[in-house]
Length: 509
Image 1: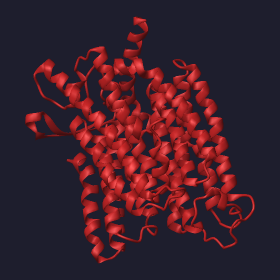
Image 2: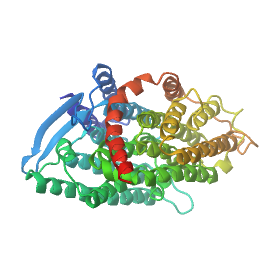
Image 3: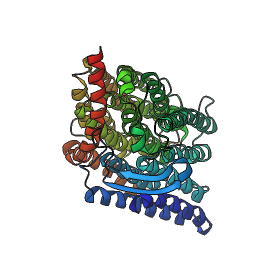
Image 4: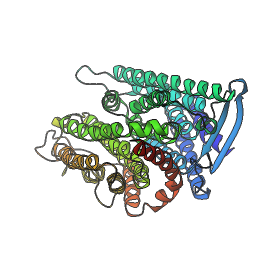
Protein backbone atom coordinates (compact mmCIF):
# COMPACT_ATOMS: atom_id res chain seq x y z
CA UNK A 1 0.00 0.00 0.00
CA UNK A 2 3.01 2.33 0.17
CA UNK A 3 2.69 3.37 -3.52
CA UNK A 4 -0.97 4.53 -3.30
CA UNK A 5 -0.07 6.48 -0.16
CA UNK A 6 2.63 8.37 -2.06
CA UNK A 7 -0.19 9.73 -4.26
CA UNK A 8 -2.88 10.05 -1.58
CA UNK A 9 -0.75 11.99 0.93
CA UNK A 10 -0.53 15.18 -1.26
CA UNK A 11 -4.25 14.97 -2.16
CA UNK A 12 -5.35 14.57 1.48
CA UNK A 13 -2.85 17.23 2.60
CA UNK A 14 -4.23 19.65 -0.01
CA UNK A 15 -7.81 19.20 1.23
CA UNK A 16 -6.66 19.73 4.83
CA UNK A 17 -4.85 22.95 3.78
CA UNK A 18 -8.02 24.21 2.11
CA UNK A 19 -10.15 23.51 5.19
CA UNK A 20 -7.44 24.77 7.55
CA UNK A 21 -7.62 28.25 6.03
CA UNK A 22 -10.60 29.12 8.27
CA UNK A 23 -8.21 28.99 11.26
CA UNK A 24 -5.80 31.51 9.76
CA UNK A 25 -3.00 31.69 7.20
CA UNK A 26 -0.32 29.89 9.21
CA UNK A 27 -2.02 26.49 9.62
CA UNK A 28 -2.31 25.70 5.85
CA UNK A 29 1.40 26.45 5.41
CA UNK A 30 2.41 24.07 8.18
CA UNK A 31 0.04 21.34 6.94
CA UNK A 32 1.53 21.68 3.43
CA UNK A 33 5.09 21.57 4.79
CA UNK A 34 4.39 18.45 6.89
CA UNK A 35 2.63 16.80 3.90
CA UNK A 36 5.56 17.39 1.57
CA UNK A 37 8.05 16.41 4.27
CA UNK A 38 6.18 13.11 4.69
CA UNK A 39 6.21 12.48 0.93
CA UNK A 40 9.93 13.25 0.74
CA UNK A 41 10.69 11.04 3.77
CA UNK A 42 8.70 8.09 2.38
CA UNK A 43 10.35 8.36 -1.05
CA UNK A 44 13.81 8.49 0.55
CA UNK A 45 12.97 5.40 2.63
CA UNK A 46 11.80 3.54 -0.51
CA UNK A 47 15.01 4.56 -2.29
CA UNK A 48 17.26 3.37 0.53
CA UNK A 49 15.37 0.10 1.18
CA UNK A 50 14.44 -0.93 -2.38
CA UNK A 51 16.20 -3.34 -4.75
CA UNK A 52 16.52 -1.39 -7.99
CA UNK A 53 18.44 -4.04 -9.91
CA UNK A 54 15.01 -5.02 -11.30
CA UNK A 55 13.59 -3.01 -14.21
CA UNK A 56 11.50 -3.46 -17.37
CA UNK A 57 13.51 -5.00 -20.21
CA UNK A 58 12.69 -6.49 -23.65
CA UNK A 59 13.79 -10.01 -22.67
CA UNK A 60 11.79 -10.52 -19.48
CA UNK A 61 8.97 -7.99 -19.52
CA UNK A 62 8.41 -5.44 -16.76
CA UNK A 63 9.95 -6.25 -13.37
CA UNK A 64 9.49 -3.76 -10.59
CA UNK A 65 11.04 -3.03 -7.20
CA UNK A 66 7.59 -2.16 -5.76
CA UNK A 67 4.17 -2.84 -7.30
CA UNK A 68 0.48 -2.32 -6.47
CA UNK A 69 -2.42 -3.62 -8.61
CA UNK A 70 -6.17 -3.42 -8.05
CA UNK A 71 -9.08 -3.59 -10.53
CA UNK A 72 -10.70 -0.26 -11.38
CA UNK A 73 -12.91 -0.71 -14.48
CA UNK A 74 -12.62 -4.47 -15.26
CA UNK A 75 -14.93 -4.37 -18.32
CA UNK A 76 -12.52 -2.03 -20.10
CA UNK A 77 -9.37 -3.69 -18.77
CA UNK A 78 -8.44 -0.62 -16.70
CA UNK A 79 -6.60 -1.21 -13.42
CA UNK A 80 -5.04 0.96 -10.74
CA UNK A 81 -1.57 -0.38 -11.48
CA UNK A 82 1.28 1.46 -9.77
CA UNK A 83 4.90 0.36 -9.99
CA UNK A 84 8.31 1.70 -9.08
CA UNK A 85 11.78 1.10 -10.49
CA UNK A 86 15.02 3.08 -10.23
CA UNK A 87 13.87 5.85 -12.58
CA UNK A 88 10.54 6.28 -10.75
CA UNK A 89 12.07 6.46 -7.28
CA UNK A 90 14.55 9.17 -8.32
CA UNK A 91 11.78 11.29 -9.86
CA UNK A 92 9.42 10.82 -6.89
CA UNK A 93 12.22 11.77 -4.45
CA UNK A 94 12.97 14.89 -6.53
CA UNK A 95 9.23 15.73 -6.45
CA UNK A 96 9.15 15.41 -2.65
CA UNK A 97 12.24 17.60 -2.20
CA UNK A 98 11.05 20.35 -4.54
CA UNK A 99 7.58 20.11 -2.97
CA UNK A 100 9.09 21.02 0.41
CA UNK A 101 10.99 23.92 -1.20
CA UNK A 102 7.94 25.21 -3.11
CA UNK A 103 6.01 25.42 0.19
CA UNK A 104 8.91 27.19 1.91
CA UNK A 105 9.57 29.70 -0.88
CA UNK A 106 5.90 30.80 -0.95
CA UNK A 107 5.71 31.19 2.86
CA UNK A 108 5.57 35.01 2.76
CA UNK A 109 4.89 35.52 -0.96
CA UNK A 110 1.29 34.23 -0.90
CA UNK A 111 -1.02 36.25 1.36
CA UNK A 112 -4.49 35.73 -0.15
CA UNK A 113 -6.51 32.49 -0.36
CA UNK A 114 -3.59 30.66 1.26
CA UNK A 115 -5.51 27.41 1.82
CA UNK A 116 -6.72 27.21 -1.78
CA UNK A 117 -3.21 28.02 -3.05
CA UNK A 118 -1.76 25.06 -1.11
CA UNK A 119 -4.62 22.81 -2.28
CA UNK A 120 -3.60 23.49 -5.89
CA UNK A 121 0.11 23.12 -5.10
CA UNK A 122 -0.40 19.76 -3.33
CA UNK A 123 -2.66 18.44 -6.11
CA UNK A 124 -0.11 19.33 -8.81
CA UNK A 125 2.52 17.35 -6.88
CA UNK A 126 0.10 14.46 -6.27
CA UNK A 127 -0.63 14.31 -10.00
CA UNK A 128 3.10 14.35 -10.80
CA UNK A 129 3.76 11.43 -8.41
CA UNK A 130 0.87 9.59 -10.11
CA UNK A 131 2.52 10.13 -13.52
CA UNK A 132 5.80 8.69 -12.21
CA UNK A 133 4.10 5.60 -10.72
CA UNK A 134 1.23 4.71 -13.12
CA UNK A 135 1.89 1.83 -15.53
CA UNK A 136 -1.71 1.45 -16.68
CA UNK A 137 -1.92 3.78 -19.69
CA UNK A 138 -5.41 5.06 -18.83
CA UNK A 139 -4.28 5.86 -15.29
CA UNK A 140 -1.13 7.53 -16.66
CA UNK A 141 -3.25 9.73 -18.94
CA UNK A 142 -5.61 10.51 -16.03
CA UNK A 143 -2.75 11.86 -13.89
CA UNK A 144 -1.10 13.55 -16.91
CA UNK A 145 -4.23 15.65 -17.53
CA UNK A 146 -5.03 16.10 -13.85
CA UNK A 147 -1.87 18.16 -13.28
CA UNK A 148 -3.09 20.84 -15.67
CA UNK A 149 -6.10 22.25 -13.81
CA UNK A 150 -4.38 23.13 -10.50
CA UNK A 151 -1.40 24.58 -12.41
CA UNK A 152 -3.82 26.75 -14.41
CA UNK A 153 -5.31 28.10 -11.15
CA UNK A 154 -1.85 28.59 -9.65
CA UNK A 155 -0.75 30.84 -12.53
CA UNK A 156 -4.13 32.58 -13.09
CA UNK A 157 -4.92 33.41 -9.44
CA UNK A 158 -1.50 33.98 -7.84
CA UNK A 159 0.69 34.86 -10.83
CA UNK A 160 2.61 38.11 -11.26
CA UNK A 161 1.36 40.91 -13.45
CA UNK A 162 2.75 40.66 -16.95
CA UNK A 163 4.53 43.16 -19.17
CA UNK A 164 4.02 44.18 -22.82
CA UNK A 165 0.40 43.12 -22.81
CA UNK A 166 1.15 39.71 -21.27
CA UNK A 167 -1.11 38.84 -18.35
CA UNK A 168 -1.18 35.91 -15.98
CA UNK A 169 -4.61 34.84 -17.37
CA UNK A 170 -3.17 34.77 -20.90
CA UNK A 171 -0.14 32.76 -19.72
CA UNK A 172 -2.32 30.27 -17.81
CA UNK A 173 -4.70 29.84 -20.75
CA UNK A 174 -1.82 29.35 -23.20
CA UNK A 175 -0.27 26.71 -20.93
CA UNK A 176 -3.61 24.92 -20.58
CA UNK A 177 -4.46 24.92 -24.31
CA UNK A 178 -1.00 23.71 -25.41
CA UNK A 179 -0.83 20.87 -22.89
CA UNK A 180 -4.50 19.89 -23.14
CA UNK A 181 -4.49 19.72 -26.94
CA UNK A 182 -1.28 17.66 -27.05
CA UNK A 183 -2.65 15.38 -24.30
CA UNK A 184 -5.71 14.62 -26.44
CA UNK A 185 -3.40 13.56 -29.30
CA UNK A 186 -1.76 11.11 -26.87
CA UNK A 187 -5.19 9.81 -25.79
CA UNK A 188 -6.04 9.01 -29.42
CA UNK A 189 -2.74 7.10 -29.73
CA UNK A 190 -3.38 5.19 -26.48
CA UNK A 191 -6.88 4.16 -27.63
CA UNK A 192 -5.57 3.15 -31.08
CA UNK A 193 -2.85 1.01 -29.45
CA UNK A 194 -5.42 -0.63 -27.15
CA UNK A 195 -7.72 -1.43 -30.11
CA UNK A 196 -4.86 -2.90 -32.16
CA UNK A 197 -3.98 -5.08 -29.16
CA UNK A 198 -7.65 -6.07 -28.81
CA UNK A 199 -7.85 -7.11 -32.49
CA UNK A 200 -4.78 -9.32 -32.03
CA UNK A 201 -5.65 -10.95 -28.70
CA UNK A 202 -9.37 -10.39 -28.08
CA UNK A 203 -8.46 -8.89 -24.68
CA UNK A 204 -9.22 -5.26 -23.84
CA UNK A 205 -6.31 -4.00 -21.73
CA UNK A 206 -4.56 -0.72 -20.89
CA UNK A 207 -1.82 -2.58 -19.00
CA UNK A 208 1.77 -1.66 -19.89
CA UNK A 209 3.04 -5.26 -19.86
CA UNK A 210 0.27 -6.41 -22.22
CA UNK A 211 0.65 -3.52 -24.66
CA UNK A 212 4.43 -4.06 -24.90
CA UNK A 213 3.66 -7.35 -26.69
CA UNK A 214 1.47 -5.71 -29.37
CA UNK A 215 2.73 -6.25 -32.91
CA UNK A 216 2.36 -3.10 -35.02
CA UNK A 217 2.69 -2.48 -38.75
CA UNK A 218 5.54 0.01 -39.45
CA UNK A 219 3.24 2.84 -40.59
CA UNK A 220 0.86 2.37 -37.66
CA UNK A 221 3.73 2.23 -35.17
CA UNK A 222 5.21 5.48 -36.52
CA UNK A 223 1.88 7.33 -36.31
CA UNK A 224 1.17 6.13 -32.76
CA UNK A 225 4.71 7.00 -31.67
CA UNK A 226 4.24 10.52 -33.07
CA UNK A 227 1.04 10.87 -31.01
CA UNK A 228 2.98 10.14 -27.82
CA UNK A 229 5.96 12.27 -28.92
CA UNK A 230 3.78 15.34 -29.60
CA UNK A 231 2.31 15.22 -26.07
CA UNK A 232 5.73 14.81 -24.46
CA UNK A 233 7.37 17.37 -26.79
CA UNK A 234 4.99 20.13 -25.67
CA UNK A 235 5.68 19.50 -21.99
CA UNK A 236 9.43 18.93 -22.60
CA UNK A 237 9.35 21.57 -24.27
CA UNK A 238 10.75 20.97 -27.75
CA UNK A 239 11.09 23.94 -30.13
CA UNK A 240 8.75 25.00 -31.86
CA UNK A 241 6.02 23.95 -29.35
CA UNK A 242 7.76 25.71 -26.46
CA UNK A 243 6.16 29.18 -26.56
CA UNK A 244 3.89 28.55 -23.55
CA UNK A 245 6.87 28.00 -21.23
CA UNK A 246 8.46 31.49 -20.94
CA UNK A 247 5.04 33.13 -20.42
CA UNK A 248 3.99 30.55 -17.83
CA UNK A 249 7.30 30.93 -15.95
CA UNK A 250 7.36 34.71 -16.05
CA UNK A 251 3.82 35.09 -14.72
CA UNK A 252 3.73 32.10 -12.31
CA UNK A 253 4.35 32.58 -8.58
CA UNK A 254 7.76 31.34 -7.40
CA UNK A 255 6.36 27.98 -6.24
CA UNK A 256 4.73 27.48 -9.66
CA UNK A 257 8.02 28.19 -11.45
CA UNK A 258 9.91 25.78 -9.14
CA UNK A 259 7.41 23.00 -9.88
CA UNK A 260 7.25 23.76 -13.62
CA UNK A 261 11.02 23.79 -14.19
CA UNK A 262 11.98 21.27 -11.54
CA UNK A 263 9.33 18.59 -12.01
CA UNK A 264 6.75 19.12 -14.77
CA UNK A 265 9.36 19.24 -17.57
CA UNK A 266 10.76 15.95 -16.21
CA UNK A 267 7.39 14.19 -16.63
CA UNK A 268 7.85 14.55 -20.41
CA UNK A 269 11.36 13.03 -20.39
CA UNK A 270 10.03 10.27 -18.11
CA UNK A 271 7.15 9.61 -20.53
CA UNK A 272 9.54 9.19 -23.45
CA UNK A 273 11.77 6.79 -21.47
CA UNK A 274 8.92 4.79 -19.95
CA UNK A 275 6.36 4.66 -22.77
CA UNK A 276 7.36 6.10 -26.17
CA UNK A 277 10.61 4.13 -26.63
CA UNK A 278 9.61 0.71 -25.21
CA UNK A 279 6.14 0.67 -26.85
CA UNK A 280 7.37 1.85 -30.27
CA UNK A 281 11.09 0.92 -30.50
CA UNK A 282 11.31 0.60 -34.30
CA UNK A 283 9.51 3.87 -34.99
CA UNK A 284 11.61 5.58 -32.28
CA UNK A 285 14.82 4.30 -33.90
CA UNK A 286 13.67 5.68 -37.25
CA UNK A 287 12.72 9.00 -35.64
CA UNK A 288 15.91 9.25 -33.52
CA UNK A 289 17.97 11.47 -35.89
CA UNK A 290 15.09 13.99 -36.16
CA UNK A 291 14.65 14.04 -32.36
CA UNK A 292 18.39 14.56 -31.79
CA UNK A 293 18.56 17.48 -34.23
CA UNK A 294 15.49 18.96 -32.51
CA UNK A 295 17.52 18.69 -29.28
CA UNK A 296 20.49 20.52 -30.83
CA UNK A 297 18.21 23.24 -32.17
CA UNK A 298 16.63 23.65 -28.72
CA UNK A 299 20.08 24.00 -27.09
CA UNK A 300 21.25 26.76 -29.47
CA UNK A 301 17.86 28.49 -29.81
CA UNK A 302 17.20 28.47 -26.04
CA UNK A 303 20.69 29.89 -25.34
CA UNK A 304 20.36 32.68 -27.93
CA UNK A 305 16.90 33.69 -26.73
CA UNK A 306 18.08 33.63 -23.10
CA UNK A 307 20.74 36.16 -24.00
CA UNK A 308 18.11 38.44 -25.57
CA UNK A 309 15.77 38.57 -22.54
CA UNK A 310 15.39 41.55 -20.22
CA UNK A 311 13.00 39.74 -17.80
CA UNK A 312 15.17 37.60 -15.49
CA UNK A 313 12.51 34.85 -15.10
CA UNK A 314 12.06 34.58 -18.88
CA UNK A 315 15.86 34.29 -19.19
CA UNK A 316 15.93 31.32 -16.76
CA UNK A 317 12.89 29.82 -18.55
CA UNK A 318 14.62 29.88 -21.95
CA UNK A 319 17.71 28.37 -20.34
CA UNK A 320 15.50 25.40 -19.32
CA UNK A 321 14.58 24.91 -22.99
CA UNK A 322 18.32 24.82 -23.76
CA UNK A 323 19.25 22.37 -20.98
CA UNK A 324 16.41 19.96 -21.74
CA UNK A 325 17.74 19.72 -25.30
CA UNK A 326 20.65 17.65 -23.90
CA UNK A 327 18.17 15.21 -22.35
CA UNK A 328 16.37 14.81 -25.70
CA UNK A 329 19.67 14.01 -27.47
CA UNK A 330 20.51 11.40 -24.82
CA UNK A 331 17.09 9.68 -24.87
CA UNK A 332 17.38 8.90 -28.60
CA UNK A 333 21.10 8.04 -28.57
CA UNK A 334 20.71 4.31 -27.82
CA UNK A 335 23.64 4.58 -25.39
CA UNK A 336 23.54 3.40 -21.78
CA UNK A 337 26.07 6.07 -20.75
CA UNK A 338 24.07 8.89 -22.37
CA UNK A 339 20.79 7.61 -20.89
CA UNK A 340 22.26 7.58 -17.40
CA UNK A 341 23.64 11.05 -18.10
CA UNK A 342 20.08 12.11 -18.98
CA UNK A 343 18.84 10.96 -15.56
CA UNK A 344 21.65 12.84 -13.76
CA UNK A 345 20.92 15.92 -15.91
CA UNK A 346 17.18 15.72 -15.05
CA UNK A 347 17.96 15.64 -11.32
CA UNK A 348 20.66 18.33 -11.55
CA UNK A 349 18.53 20.62 -13.71
CA UNK A 350 15.63 20.17 -11.29
CA UNK A 351 17.84 21.37 -8.43
CA UNK A 352 19.61 24.23 -10.25
CA UNK A 353 16.52 25.60 -12.04
CA UNK A 354 14.50 25.47 -8.79
CA UNK A 355 17.28 27.40 -7.02
CA UNK A 356 17.47 30.05 -9.76
CA UNK A 357 13.70 30.60 -9.67
CA UNK A 358 13.76 30.83 -5.85
CA UNK A 359 16.52 33.46 -6.14
CA UNK A 360 14.52 35.34 -8.81
CA UNK A 361 11.60 35.33 -6.38
CA UNK A 362 13.77 36.75 -3.59
CA UNK A 363 15.06 39.48 -5.94
CA UNK A 364 11.50 40.37 -6.98
CA UNK A 365 10.38 40.62 -3.32
CA UNK A 366 13.17 43.15 -2.66
CA UNK A 367 13.25 45.14 -5.91
CA UNK A 368 9.62 44.73 -7.10
CA UNK A 369 10.84 44.29 -10.66
CA UNK A 370 12.08 41.43 -12.84
CA UNK A 371 13.49 43.77 -15.48
CA UNK A 372 17.29 43.40 -15.74
CA UNK A 373 17.59 46.97 -17.05
CA UNK A 374 16.19 48.20 -13.71
CA UNK A 375 18.74 46.19 -11.69
CA UNK A 376 22.47 46.70 -11.20
CA UNK A 377 24.93 47.60 -8.48
CA UNK A 378 23.46 45.05 -6.07
CA UNK A 379 26.62 43.00 -5.35
CA UNK A 380 27.96 45.24 -2.58
CA UNK A 381 24.52 46.20 -1.23
CA UNK A 382 23.10 42.77 -0.41
CA UNK A 383 24.91 39.94 1.39
CA UNK A 384 24.71 36.30 0.19
CA UNK A 385 22.18 36.50 -2.63
CA UNK A 386 24.47 37.74 -5.47
CA UNK A 387 27.24 35.23 -4.64
CA UNK A 388 24.77 32.34 -4.40
CA UNK A 389 23.20 33.42 -7.72
CA UNK A 390 26.67 33.34 -9.31
CA UNK A 391 27.19 29.78 -8.06
CA UNK A 392 23.87 28.53 -9.50
CA UNK A 393 24.42 30.38 -12.78
CA UNK A 394 27.80 28.64 -13.05
CA UNK A 395 26.22 25.29 -12.09
CA UNK A 396 23.54 25.72 -14.77
CA UNK A 397 26.21 26.22 -17.45
CA UNK A 398 27.90 22.96 -16.38
CA UNK A 399 30.70 23.97 -14.01
CA UNK A 400 32.90 20.93 -13.11
CA UNK A 401 32.12 19.79 -9.57
CA UNK A 402 28.35 20.23 -10.00
CA UNK A 403 25.75 17.67 -11.05
CA UNK A 404 25.02 19.52 -14.31
CA UNK A 405 28.60 18.90 -15.49
CA UNK A 406 28.34 15.14 -14.81
CA UNK A 407 25.02 14.90 -16.66
CA UNK A 408 26.12 16.89 -19.71
CA UNK A 409 29.53 15.16 -19.89
CA UNK A 410 27.93 11.68 -19.81
CA UNK A 411 25.36 12.72 -22.44
CA UNK A 412 28.00 14.11 -24.82
CA UNK A 413 30.46 11.24 -24.40
CA UNK A 414 27.72 8.59 -24.69
CA UNK A 415 26.07 10.14 -27.77
CA UNK A 416 29.31 10.85 -29.67
CA UNK A 417 29.80 7.39 -31.32
CA UNK A 418 26.31 7.41 -32.89
CA UNK A 419 25.91 11.14 -33.63
CA UNK A 420 29.24 13.02 -33.66
CA UNK A 421 27.96 16.18 -35.40
CA UNK A 422 25.04 16.44 -33.02
CA UNK A 423 27.46 16.31 -30.07
CA UNK A 424 29.85 18.88 -31.60
CA UNK A 425 27.04 21.40 -32.11
CA UNK A 426 25.55 20.66 -28.67
CA UNK A 427 28.96 21.32 -27.11
CA UNK A 428 29.06 24.69 -28.93
CA UNK A 429 25.70 25.37 -27.27
CA UNK A 430 27.47 25.04 -23.90
CA UNK A 431 29.65 28.01 -24.84
CA UNK A 432 26.53 30.07 -25.54
CA UNK A 433 25.24 28.93 -22.15
CA UNK A 434 28.19 30.48 -20.38
CA UNK A 435 27.56 33.76 -22.24
CA UNK A 436 23.94 34.19 -21.14
CA UNK A 437 24.58 32.96 -17.57
CA UNK A 438 27.39 35.43 -16.98
CA UNK A 439 25.51 38.23 -18.78
CA UNK A 440 22.58 37.66 -16.40
CA UNK A 441 24.87 37.98 -13.36
CA UNK A 442 26.57 41.07 -14.79
CA UNK A 443 23.33 42.89 -15.65
CA UNK A 444 21.59 42.01 -12.36
CA UNK A 445 24.37 42.51 -9.81
CA UNK A 446 27.16 44.68 -11.27
CA UNK A 447 27.31 48.01 -13.08
CA UNK A 448 25.83 51.34 -11.93
CA UNK A 449 23.40 51.45 -9.01
CA UNK A 450 19.82 51.85 -10.31
CA UNK A 451 18.04 52.07 -6.96
CA UNK A 452 19.54 53.73 -3.89
CA UNK A 453 17.24 52.06 -1.35
CA UNK A 454 18.87 49.67 1.14
CA UNK A 455 18.20 45.99 0.36
CA UNK A 456 17.56 43.43 3.12
CA UNK A 457 19.63 40.25 2.99
CA UNK A 458 18.33 36.69 2.85
CA UNK A 459 16.45 35.39 5.89
CA UNK A 460 17.46 32.09 7.53
CA UNK A 461 14.60 30.22 5.79
CA UNK A 462 15.60 31.52 2.36
CA UNK A 463 19.31 30.96 2.96
CA UNK A 464 18.83 27.37 4.16
CA UNK A 465 16.80 26.53 1.01
CA UNK A 466 19.39 27.70 -1.51
CA UNK A 467 22.43 26.51 0.46
CA UNK A 468 20.80 23.06 0.79
CA UNK A 469 20.23 22.92 -2.99
CA UNK A 470 23.84 24.05 -3.57
CA UNK A 471 25.16 21.30 -1.29
CA UNK A 472 23.06 18.67 -3.12
CA UNK A 473 24.32 19.89 -6.53
CA UNK A 474 27.95 19.65 -5.39
CA UNK A 475 27.30 16.20 -3.85
CA UNK A 476 25.77 15.05 -7.14
CA UNK A 477 28.74 16.49 -9.03
CA UNK A 478 31.38 14.93 -6.79
CA UNK A 479 29.66 11.62 -5.99
CA UNK A 480 26.93 10.77 -8.55
CA UNK A 481 27.25 7.01 -7.94
CA UNK A 482 24.00 6.51 -5.93
CA UNK A 483 21.96 8.07 -8.77
CA UNK A 484 23.87 6.09 -11.42
CA UNK A 485 23.46 2.81 -9.50
CA UNK A 486 19.75 3.39 -8.95
CA UNK A 487 19.02 4.22 -12.60
CA UNK A 488 21.38 1.63 -14.16
CA UNK A 489 18.91 -1.25 -14.58
CA UNK A 490 16.08 0.99 -15.84
CA UNK A 491 18.29 2.71 -18.40
CA UNK A 492 19.79 -0.62 -19.49
CA UNK A 493 16.26 -1.81 -20.31
CA UNK A 494 15.49 1.34 -22.34
CA UNK A 495 18.85 1.07 -24.11
CA UNK A 496 18.12 -2.57 -25.07
CA UNK A 497 14.80 -1.62 -26.65
CA UNK A 498 16.23 1.21 -28.71
CA UNK A 499 19.64 -0.36 -29.49
CA UNK A 500 17.93 -3.50 -30.86
CA UNK A 501 15.70 -1.39 -33.11
CA UNK A 502 18.66 0.78 -34.24
CA UNK A 503 20.66 -2.35 -35.16
CA UNK A 504 17.70 -3.69 -37.19
CA UNK A 505 17.37 -0.35 -38.96
CA UNK A 506 21.11 -0.27 -39.77
CA UNK A 507 21.10 -3.86 -41.12
CA UNK A 508 17.95 -3.12 -43.16
CA UNK A 509 19.73 -0.30 -44.91
